[in-house]
Length: 122
Image (cartoon, rainbow, N blue to C red; front, side, top):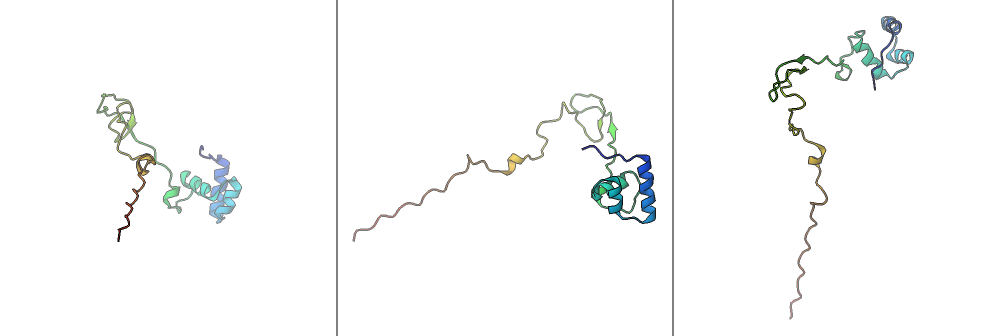
């Protein structure tokens, strides 16, 4: 879902509401969004510095570099510290997938039955 971009008028009104000490609930009703969404907007737009929870921190812009790919030597821009381009990156990059956490039912063995004892003659 794309981020909600308040208009400059809405941002000005939110700034006035913050200065007046209005609650987050009142501000979220004004914008018509959830309180958590409002907090993300306030942090992203730089209106509130008192919200410090990691869940509200605005994403930083990804730095790019043109260092040659270690595989094909391409200098196309890619995220910094990414040493291989998408074409050269190995398919198995070491991250586990969901299939490695589950045992397939086809490989599961049922326990072998215990041998029956024969009655002794006697």
